[in-house]
Image (tube, rainbow, N blue to C red; front, top):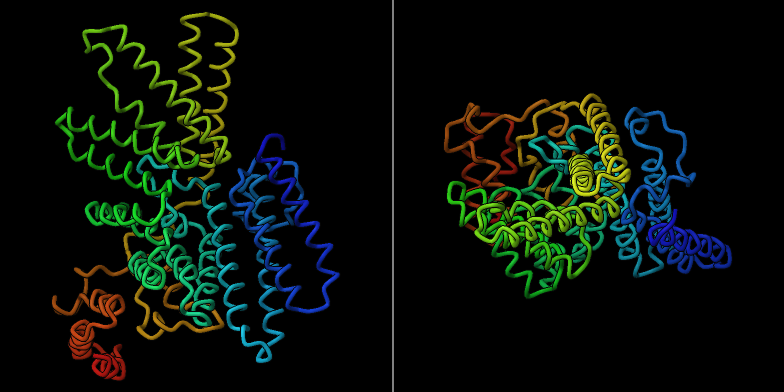
Length: 492
């Protein structure tokens, strides 16, 4: 509760209390809409705070699902706090709908509240995902994409978020931020469709930095390093964001791995990666940049003892260790120790520092640090065992598409759930591979043809290729509708 994060939560609560007192003074639904929507914004902002500041709060309600009981008390409090914003946005939508046709801005008001509701639900999913070990690395399935596949609670939040964004886009198709939000939510389910949403956001507003950052990081995740580098180059012309440099650091780390066997080139890439993370931290204390710097600044110097100047080598090695430890400590303070991999590293660094102090000073504080590090390490091992036991993989996650019907992909419904195809694919045990398809080889790329048409709607050739692919499939199966083939031909 102490420090700047505790103070931030205290001011958030004061602002919320003030808005609640103001809401009873407004008689018009228009003013009440603004107050209610702002109330939702304040609740949603709590995602940026570490969970430990909620340890003494009492926002959580009694829950009976297994995943909520696994989450720590402070994480449950944080999610319950953010969920109050969900209620506020839903109320804002109802207030806007009350005006109906009497207000010409009605569609935009409802769309704005729906878009913010999608952001709130996505914030809840991110908090839950981080608490369950997302981003821990170590060769485990811990990305947001994987966590959604392994956790029903996260998948439910993401699906509802997608529904809200699609409702906002249906009412206001020129809202770039809603398209960006939709892409962010879809990235955990269908990266290809997510790319389409990011590109649509950039078509509407080319100076929007978020979709550029998102699509650049997505390309990096899927190994498209050259394309990712081009996107990051374009981002430098739009805004100076930390993700621009975090992306650069990530690409340089990948390049360092590719130079395996050539120590000089590999180390040069690692040094540049550390510099990229430092540049990101000059903009703001981004947790990803802190984590990257903590790892790369030590790995970028492995020549201790090889240099002729032993004193310089010793001081350089000591400085890199100090920078790595401090970066990790700040990362843990910002994130609330949600990343299990970072917790392991932090515990080991504490033990290492204690051993070095013990060798030099042999004081009681050194023994205390070693004991603290061992205790933290044991606690993280218990968290890992519980997490692995509880969130066991329920299905394969090697697919990167969701086979939505063409119309549904482009024109989602205003109300109701997101197309059932999405949920069906997510819940399936596996997704057929192109190599396992019973169709001839030239018809197994129906999803590529469909997505090519969606991403290039003004190109007749793409629609003709899609129609041809559908016709080929129609001759081998009865699942494809002749109407869909005819519509593709007419579109071309």
